[in-house]
Length: 544
Image 1 (cartoon, rainbow, N blue to C red):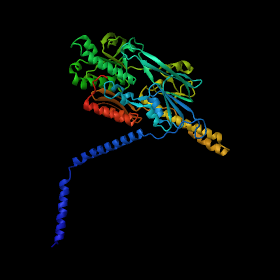
Image 2 (tube, rainbow, N blue to C red; image 1 turned 135 degrees about the vertical axis):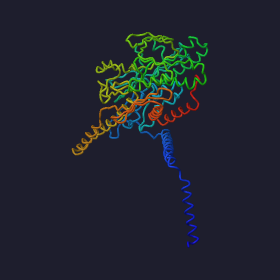
Image 3 (cartoon, rainbow, N blue to C red; image 1 turned 90 degrees about the vertical axis):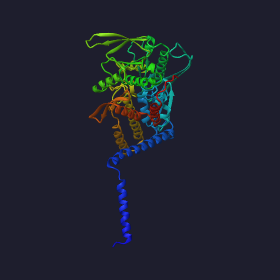
Image 4 (cartoon, helix red, strand yellow; image 1 turned 180 degrees about the horizontal axis):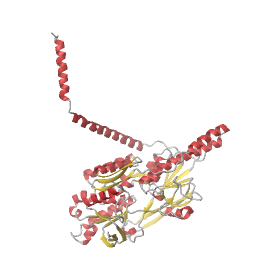
């Protein structure tokens, strides 16, 4: 017979086993728990990383001061950066600013996240959300950077100087839409010297010389454009509510026209229709039912830079969301109330269209700025340039020894996108690091006391020179929002694989990529916060 103790242990073991079996979860529950746990861990990790990034950004490290000499005793070169766009800011952010005395000159003291600019006029994101103060970016570099808020008025390539200009104006208080005026109170002008000049002044909207566009259309290129478009939209809506239903003036005021079927025009049209469907229908349903959003494109398709199968998908989404897509149509004239356009028919004939509008947004293409065009005339090698400064494979401006151009003001043979400008900035920052290393080694070579030491330095110098490489653009894909929480994407996976996709899941990819592209953790947090606020409270319909 077994002892009482043994019998008790057996009963305990049997009871414990039964408890384990009774509480064991089914296989599907255990498998389902894996992604939940991974998601929870991912959320904790992402939140912790974002919090740490915000902490680091708010407490930048002490910067090295600007000096006349480098650490090896040679003269430290002055680098002047013109502009605070994608190219210039990417260059500044990646540049080791302890190697040069860096000065940034720009009429605006912030970096603008242009991919989300079409979302700003409707209030999907706030205007302040998509800008990053350039002084904040400069403060997070290892060396002190001087910033001058001014226009670059002239470049003297021979004497290596830039003339900067700032005019202080006093406005009369009358809105821009009225015939107000501004008075110049004070003008500041100064010449600054450079050893290297990096031009990233961007481009300006082009009107193709079409009468009335410059006077009556609104553009979507800079932050003030977003403010102006929003005021015009809300003013047109409020004015339309004063007129009786069915009146021609009410119909005209509620006709919103976007010209240009590229990503900017398409995304703004989609955002505008979202605003009508999701917010205006809630608060002003009688107005929302009469709003008409029209997208005009001179080509047979929108988003021509995307794969062909996404063209038809974009057209389908526009049909579903009631955006009137007018293709093969070129604008010929614009008045304060009407657009005259010429539509090419299938039989080759043309038809003249008269399109009344309340708000017209022009999102067609780019033209060089005046500063860029002045170099077309000054430098013989640039006399044939039209779209941007001609550059070699290292982004150096043809006809110069120490002037570089990147972004929309340079003609590199690549599309004028933020992706190209960003890669140009990163590339040029690396090139300048190599240039500084070469300059230091040349100083060491001069100071070498014997042939053996000279030989060693010469070997290192030759090795460093191999780091000077040509710029090669690596296309990472293209994204565009269509509205109704749908997007299209041409995604590139390595060098030999790509995927074209569209729909609601692609919309999540679009949002994820844009968050990753943000220039700072602060901007990432604000963009995510704005999207969350809109999903909970909707867009603001008040007019500032």
